[in-house]
Amino acid sequence: MAFAKEQMRFTDGLSGRREQPRDGISLRQDQERRGNRMLDGELNAILAQVQEIASDVVAPLSIETDEQARWPEPGLRSMQDAGFGGLVVPERLGGKGHGLFALTRVCETLGRECASTAICFGMHSVGTSVIAAHATADQQSRYLTPICEGRHITTLSLSEAGTGAHFYLPQTSLEALDDEHYSITGTKTFVTNGSCADSYVVSAVAAEPDAPVGKFSCVIVDADADGISWGAPWDGLGMRGNSSRSMELRGVRLPRSNLLGSEGDQIWYTFNVIMPYFLVAMGGTFLGVASSALEEARRHLLRRYHAHTGLNLAQNSVLQHRLATLWGSLERTRRLIYHAAQSYDAGEPDALIAVMAAKAEVADTAVLLVNEAMTFTGGIGYRKGSKLHRMLRDARACHLMSPTTDILRVWIGRALLGQPLLAD
Ligand SMILES: Cc1cc2nc3c(=O)[nH]c(=O)nc-3n(C[C@H](O)[C@H](O)[C@H](O)COP(=O)(O)OP(=O)(O)OC[C@H]3O[C@@H](n4cnc5c(N)ncnc54)[C@H](O)[C@@H]3O)c2cc1C
Image 1 (cartoon, protein in one colour):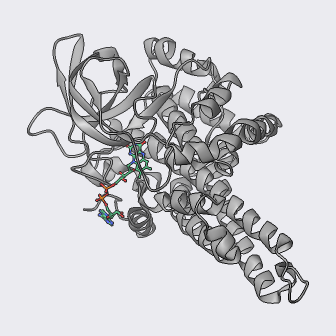
Image 2 (spheres, rainbow, N blue to C red; image 1 turned 90 degrees about the horizontal axis):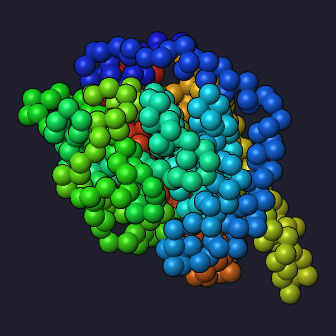
Image 3 (tube, rainbow, N blue to C red; image 1 turned 180 degrees about the vertical axis):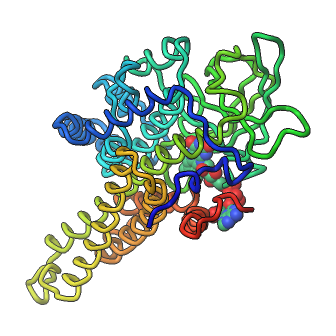
């Protein structure tokens, strides 16, 4: 079934406007390069390096990251030092030139050891891709160059208490102060990497009473700008290393050159950059969690012996059958995520439906696998401090991180029915 590309455009759902991509040739070239990068051996080399970082740096700190709700700085620093800060920045802007497939595989590799580290890196990469999409020369030198050189972490600051899961409806206001400056005022919630990043990609609406709904802009706000204050440290059930804090911006003054794209065209960013990158970053992270849960279950079946039979649980056919069913769920989800990311990188028209479905499915799969793995591991897995204990809490976040599972499924249904995604 073919879906017209514009069915997927948020823009159409709100106002009937069609996308007018600027700089179309370089964006298309970036996409072609991303498609080709999937085929070369460089990604395997990157994944081998990320695996080393995951095993040597991330895994040993994962308990501490969770128990002390500590932002996973050492893991992120290692990723930067290895040159992956600019993983998704096009080569023409100094980055590695990879796309969604690489991002999801990297997040999967990190997510097997620590979901917080994976999401923190993922959110940096999403913020980076938003900056890179239409970067000016000034934004390239002030943000992308330090990002690619491993000297700068950015992140996405969209959600607000007032509009909740509808992250595309900010109420934070952006006001023109003079020809050179804007002022931004509002409160953001759940900002992952909050208070730890060097800059924040913040969404805001024009401070005009009659500004159309959804006509919002994104700007880069430097961490050291005057007027920013942070809410209480993040103390979540899971994803405890995320530092997902609330961020108050009170009349923060910023240069107009920090505007991303043009005023009011952020709907384009939402569906063409933020959503795809964010969804596959989460897809990879929670795929990593699900894979790790299956491995915990498998190992437990092999090592748990009963005194009365002298057999291990691996000899039990009910458990063998259940393990096989879980493997099937995991592999179906893995194939969907990889397919979705590769389709997007290749510029296929229906890719966004697959990307949305991938994130909705991985939320179900991760919760299912971790839950089931906990049943397999009996009282041993149920103990506080077990790896599954942490993974169970981490996996629950996937359903409620925007776009949430329910919202994604409504959007997928609408897309399949040829309706605009934002019909309500
Ligand atoms: C660990 C974590 C990290 C996060 N990181 C970031 C980040 O880095 N940047 C950022 O901007 N945000 C981030 N968020 C915010 C996140 O993406 C959501 O926006 C936020 O969790 C929504 O919370 P809420 O309680 O306001 O949801 P609510 O809007 O109150 O929604 C509650 C429930 O109602 C459902 N619901 C609401 N409206 C509809 C509808 N129309 N149709 C169907 N169901 C609906 C939702 O799906 C959800 O399940 C993060 C959140 C968490 C938990």
